[in-house]
Image (cartoon, rainbow, N blue to C red; front, side):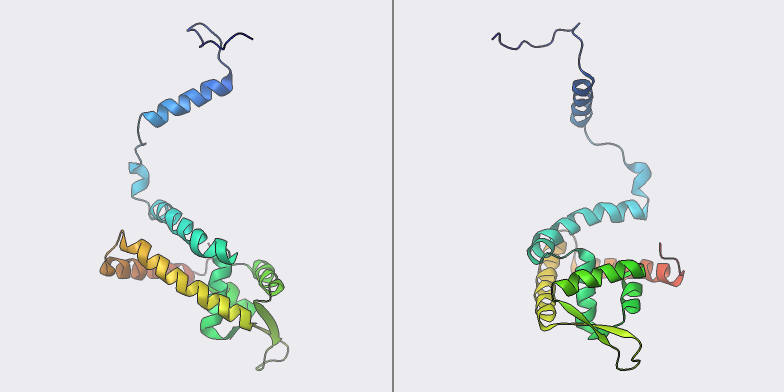
Length: 181
């Protein structure tokens, strides 16, 4: 078998190889100018969420087999004791069919259960099981520690507090508009 030779200048190049070569040349040229995006809050939030999600998935999501929305739902129940599916859907800004699927998944793992509402026997409340409370407490403790460690590398305590306040204002404005998106 003859050894492979390097392509000569006049040789035809497969489209996949040409695309790969073009991609490598652009990557070697350095980062793109993102100035048009840098002034967009959505762009900044999306970029900032990448390492946050990675840290969450590494320390909480993976080990506890929880998606961010499932983690949030468990913490809402931990803090409030019980809630209706509608309250959970509103707090998490998800559609009622999605909250039903979330509740079904977590109930299948014996982390929560549905009970008749004491205030209105026709309604249903959602409560954590003992296993759900234990998991929520452990996951919350780990998330607080990992977030404090991660945020401390980029923000002072005052900057973190300001960021939380500003993000809260954005979320409140969206909620006040009545628009789910």
